[in-house]
Amino acid sequence: MSMRRFSVIALMAISVAACGGDDDLGAAYQDDSDSEEAQGGGGSEADASEDETDAAQPITTIEPANFKVLLAFLPSREGWTAGEPNGSTTAVPGYKVSVASNEYRRTASDGTSEQVVTVEITDGGFAEMISAPFEMMAQMSNETTEGYQKGVTVAGTPAYEQWTISTRRSELSALVAKRFLIHFTGSQVEPSELRQWLEGMKLAELAAQR
Image 1 (cartoon, one colour):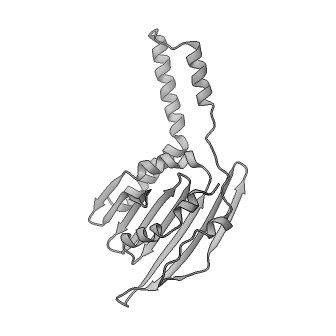
Image 2: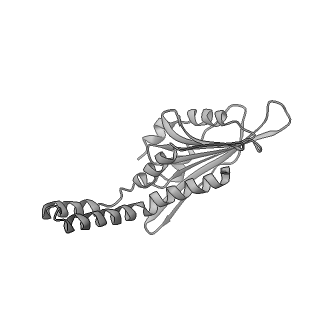
């Protein structure tokens, strides 16, 4: 299985879990309940009422921080030249998201190539919606002749790492406080370098944002 195909499958799994998983589980639960009632094993009316109340509970959302807040958490690294940071906060009925990003460059130690790292911090406020699917993905792993994809833990934070040998491209995604998604991409950069970038960020202060 190629690296690209594995990525598509993993992302599809996250989309199903985040967007449609609850409906599927609800349907399965209903089928089981109908079966139990047909067999005379249904629960009491009080139990049914409690189940309906639980099902009606909305997904908890958090007001996303403004992009200006996120800009302050973009990293800086000695020896790297930072570009102009970018940020935005977009709101439509029922949804709001803030994003802050920047690009960093330096000449590789061998002097023959340029290394590039991009960092993006996203806050959509949907803590419960993305945390479980992301943590599931962070437990997956796949290694081929092309490279690997695997879950890692960096500075106590669940993360997902990818490495492509032929292009020397690395990626690292981390979920901070089950809310802030930090995504790194590196060109001519080893995965271990991206982990150092993440470790150098003010993750505790970011997690404390409300």
